[in-house]
Amino acid sequence: MKTTELVYRSINSAYHSKPISMLVIEPEMITSKTGVMLFTHGWHGNRFQHKEKMEWAAERFDLVTVSVEFRQSGYDFDPVKGLGACLPYDAGFYQVFDVLNGLRHILSQRPQVNHRRVFHYGGSQGGQIALLSALYAPKTFAWLYVSCPLTHIDAKFQALSGRYFAPWELEVRSPLEMAEGIPCPVYLEYGTVDPTVPHESHGLVLADKLTKSGQLARLIEYEGDHGLQPATDKLAAFQAMSEFIEWSAEVPQCNDFEQGSLVSVPCAERTLLIDWSKKTEDHTLFQWGT
Image (cartoon, rainbow, N blue to C red; front, side):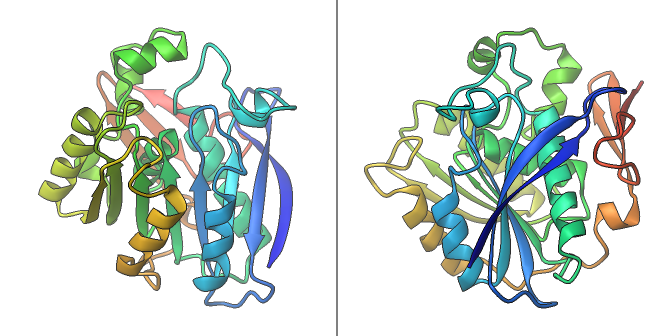
């Protein structure tokens, strides 16, 4: 396998784009059948959080695996320790664009891979980002795999973010509010005694909505905490879930980035308007409508 690190620029302001780092682990030989899989870390985490899973999946399932270190977290927050998060914290909006722009960047760097065979794994806030990524780029992912995902910014996470959110800001960060619109299958796992992202208020309600919309591909519950311990650990759980995953799955059309899709995401009294024909660093990549 090959391991590299890349830096690209993501949306920020009209005059200053945001440099974002990513970790890439891929097979030695890439063909037109090789897929791409995002692995998105959690709040306070960094791009190396899912390295073992990335290495395991890259060769076994013929994937270019990518972990984007989104803004305000990990080494972007603390260049020495790679842990922690800024205050005030954006709590999963610009972070989604960082991750999706990272995917766009690697697809442009690896034009020979299968651009329809694209998957997304995320844990904790990374699960929130993975779910939102399929809503912001609905023609891009063949499936999602979320582990103990944060599904909405409740009072606890509002306090942790150190800022106030208007109703529309909460909704645009809430995959739970928009779960019926998730366009692809979702593999879901949770720890039943998770003190960080409670199973009852996040996992069960998400599973119920995904079941009703027909998009819950598999649910596995462990008698464990946010790391699924003592029942198991995240790598072993990933390997167990892999037995049920359709690794050859593809989306039926070109992805949103290649189509230059215009995506509309209604949220409370506003609408998020995304233009995927814009460059990763273009400050007009998204705008707000009423």
